[in-house]
Image (cartoon, rainbow, N blue to C red; front, side, top):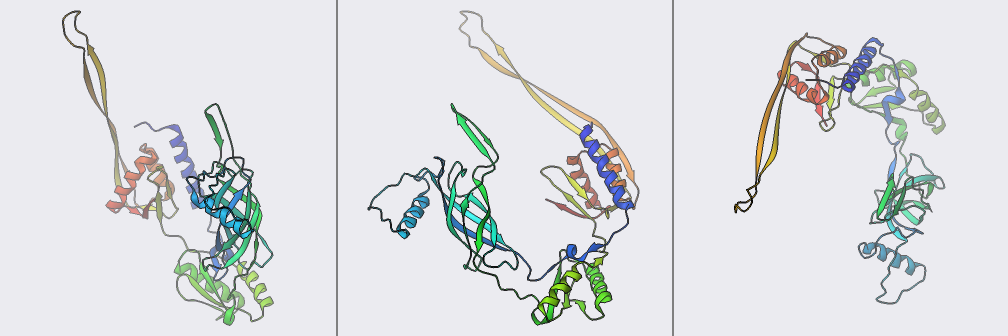
Length: 373
């Protein structure tokens, strides 16, 4: 099988990166990059609103009745009562969903960036203005109010039956478009205890973090509850607690080596392996069988005045081509660089790797967890 030069270059680059990773010593990482502090998190906010001022690119109200209902309800709150049976034909209004993230320790008066997304069939939100929209959390309480001019990064033009659209026109952003109205209560430092949560469960790394903290602040300050949560005793004063956390996050820790893992994307054919992947001794056979079926139509034309009919027949051709296979021996204990080099040597494309690695895992020669996404 012939492998394209782009695939070969990709494999060579992957092998080079793997060799560099293996040659580089394990470096320490900041505790800030390994853990998060329990209770210090963002909260998602959601709201339903109306964008007005569109240039005829709003919702088609006959197909989105909720847009008309929203406009009627808004007008009633503003003291405008429409006659019974009034049918509104709106073109410059669009119903939207507004989303935002409320950061930890956000206080009333601070501003947030928001995303405005059309939920109807509006063609574009470009040039629109979002009217005052309450933003609610998961508990149903209002934590912010959003309003402002929507900025859309795309552009669309249409003329003579032809149209051109660049980027997405039904989603826009408003920088600082929401104001925080309510703060989220935080239990940080309650009972003078802080919990550190590892980004990835690892008993060895948790043990090393506990050891590093106790070496710096004294024995008994920290202890692990399990492979993910570490309990740390903190000062009682809020000012001292902040300084303590700032110093704690800058501690350098050598994390343990991650488990061997291979990630394969079945849709794109991409394969990513970490440096812990090794192989047992195995033999890999690689070949290709291609079958080509083609049909060549032939027309049989009768002689004049013969009374016959024109007949179309299909002349089918089946061609089977089998490239010569290769058998390669991979020695046990091979590193990532050697694995990539071996698979590259037998001319395997990313799609071939999917099948090869699955077979190696089934045979027990691949020392890694295999995950297909």
